[in-house]
Image (cartoon, rainbow, N blue to C red; front, side, top):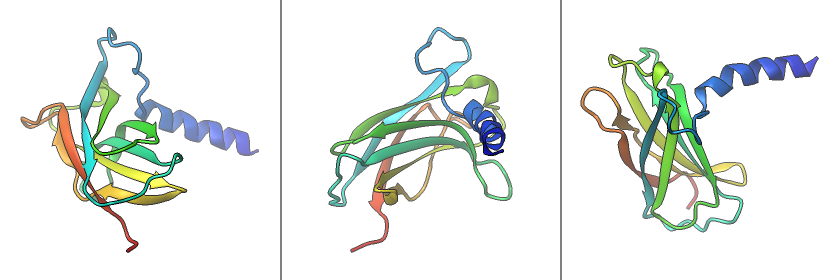
Length: 138
């Protein structure tokens, strides 16, 4: 009975993902935009994937809660623009939100942001510019 477990997992995960991509007239639609750049020389192949996540980082245990995510295959060369859509109903003014990014290639993370960029609340805007750094390797 693997399907019901998958269906349950999908139903819990999907609301956190961006479901408002195409309907900007939806009053609950929000987005965070920005750029991702990297200085490290990394040869990316066509199966490379850029993943940008919007996270609620308020929890005391340090585990972020996913609010929105954008994925782009073959991000190309730096800098890369991104847009993460999210449901405004899950954002509270008394919580802290950050944007982070990684580039994965062949299932391995090759570039990652060291620190998330604060957005949306406590005077932070809905724009973030991220710098990625090489993960592991030479």
